[in-house]
Image 1 (tube, rainbow, N blue to C red):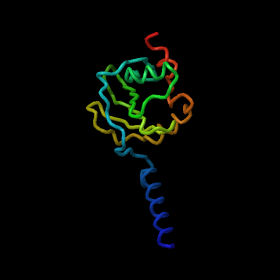
Image 2 (image 1 turned 180 degrees about the horizontal axis):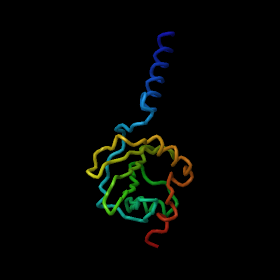
Image 3 (image 1 turned 90 degrees about the vertical axis):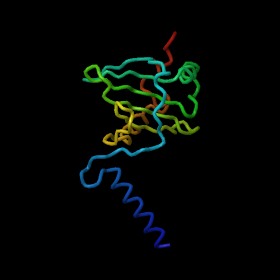
Image 4 (image 1 turned 60 degrees about the vertical axis):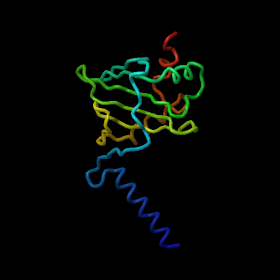
Length: 149
């Protein structure tokens, strides 16, 4: 029993160390279940200006139809924020519904070449979007529901 408890403590300690970025104090992203979607097939449903960033919000037609109908988006749905700086793609922020539960979303940052951007803290993303659990974790739900009307 002592060995099992020690093992659990070690795993928790290592997970905390990884989450906090080791001694440097900066968190790092790691590859997870999020895949880069076929954004060429997506609808750009709204744009948000935030500081030096122009953010294009995109998702599939199927997701927009579900949102408009007031139903949950299907498992596998991607929501994409394309972050433009000085007129060029700076990075992509992708959220993906990975399970049937209302809060089963995963987040990942990607470089303009669509490779995983490991210097971003995806735990911070989930923490912020958690405040929108009643709106499918979206800050732009009203815009998505109004798109095409």
